[in-house]
Amino acid sequence: MGPMSNAAQTLPSGRVALSHQTPAVALGPLDGRYRPQTAVLVDHLSEAALNRERVHVEVEWFIHLCEQRALTGLEPLTDEQKAGLRAVVTGFDAGSVAELAELEAVTVHDVKAVEYFLARRLPDLGLEHLTSLVHFACTSEDVNNLSYALGIRDAVQRVWLPAARELVTVVSAMARDAKATPMLSHTHGQPATPTTLGKELAVFAHRLDRQVRRVAGTEFLGKLNGATGTFAAHTAAAPETDWPEISRSFVTGLGLTWNPLTTQIESHDWQAELYADLARFNRILHNLCTDVWSYISIGYFQQIPVEGATGSSTMPHKVNPIRFENAEANAEISCSLLDTLAATLVTSRWQRDLTDSSSQRNIGVAFGHSLLAISNVVKGLDRLAVAEATLAEDLDGNWEVLGEAVQTAMRAEAVAGREGMDNPYERLKELTRGHRVDARRMREFIDGLGLSDDTARRLGALTPADYTGLAEQLVDSYGL
Image 1: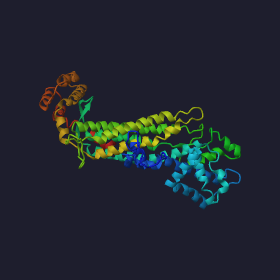
Image 2: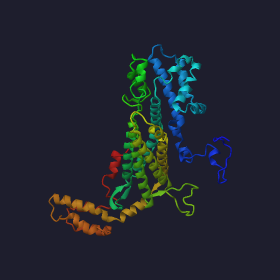
Image 3: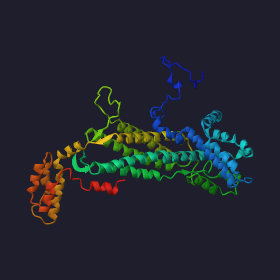
Image 4: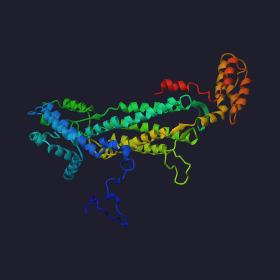
């Protein structure tokens, strides 16, 4: 029985081998449990998508050489011939994948299989006399670097960026809704100067959006210059042709940025830059998860139960913040892969080694875990309600946080020439540090300071819930 047979096989333990039962039994979670959330990336970052892009690059290079009359005897193709070649790309399907697999089993070389795959289509288009033009003067990396750049570009622009922008939109909307909802801050885990819940969410929206804009500005580089980046084979075949210009116009025509100076490989620096930005986005998202998780833990957010869902197999009361925990884990996994890719891809021994080939096969996995983290956070935020009563109770139980306001107002009074405003910080420290102060005690203290009438009146009316500074205005002015 062949190794790929779907017939039931038995393991040494006597159990039925799952690996041969159905393709749905996936080794990794992105292609198994989480496939509904990540399957969209298959169109851009899978092995099949890479092969489709390889065919695309080979087709466009073939057409470009003809259009540019790069070689003696070449003429532009007819519209019908160009359409026929491009139909090989648009019609790339499961049958194409299978055919390429059969060719690669013989060639033991993925790009050579693509060359033969395309050459088979030429006779039907009346182009059999140009079979030698397929993959002309190309090293495999000429095709691969462009194919990866196209797939990554489309994954970023069509999948990752829309998901990330949706998240920013959701967080921004929550920030606006809660911009005036006062909340006790906790610096070092201790009660601190109040803020508003909306302002704290706006901080995350602003941070995430900044990374989104960096990712959106990514330059996707590509090269086509031969086995060691010198156009040696090109000029040996046609020394009169301006090969750098042919290369530049081809790469830019694909919608990429031309890299004119490389070894055999495109240096991948742009990928490292992109992955650093994606990883930074993931880490900010992770920070959002840990903060929201903590707010849930202390009761600032209530989770809206999902009908029929179980929070614990033994404790029926529980509604666990699993979306945020899941997102944390997936952000961490994505960052690990992105960091490794960024560190590995910028190094290649001399003019070429194959470490990048194996590494780049994991790009889709890194994107998939990031996409899954984003999806979970969006879903988790949708099941939250602000517990305003808990927020208000916590503020009312921490009047000592007004000590900052009082001592700062005393400093201002001293600068204005008011007597008796000596040692304001120390006096408030004695009152508040390590002590709980209620409304009555704080107001008695303020009344005894000898402040100007206006300042005494303003501070006497201040409550922890009012002491939020410009938090609401900051959301209006700088929120998204």
